[in-house]
Amino acid sequence: MSDHVAGLRIKYLRKKKGLSLQQVADTIGRSVGFVSQIERGLSRPSIEDIGAIAELLEVDYLSFFTAKKEQLANRFIVKRSERSALDYRGGISDELLSPDISGKFHMLFTELASGAKSSDDMMKDSGEQGGYVLEGELELMIDGEIFKLEAGDSFQFVSTTPHSYVNTGRVPTKIVWVFSQR
Image (cartoon, rainbow, N blue to C red; front, side, top):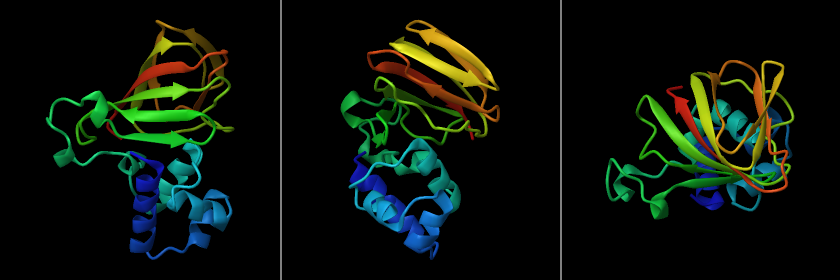
């Protein structure tokens, strides 16, 4: 999904909840101008920004880039050309590999540019997650421990455990993530 469509969804949900740009900006610690640019598809939010906006709007962050079921040619299969995507600030992009997010788990394909990191702070979420590093290098921090992963390595942890990640290599890192129901 384009940044413009994600921005329009954010704007729609913000207005539906009766929130001002200022209220969203205050909640995520950004300027009103930046939030406006997100809504217009002119600026890319960070993963932290999307998470905070989703929490404020009381939706799953995946709703910002989930394709409508009727747009998919098949309810079981997602063709590469049908994937919904969201590009974040800082060189991270996600593509939804699952047909939707209504099941007990969903899958994402993530690409991190060299030096790209999930956030400056440790993140927490509900559910469980795991992944498989297809290409590149990944430094994964889980509950204070640092794990250095490379192509062919995999991982799994409870999402409420503080975590973050960074591409420490010189080439893009590509990962397939699996997230349990949130």
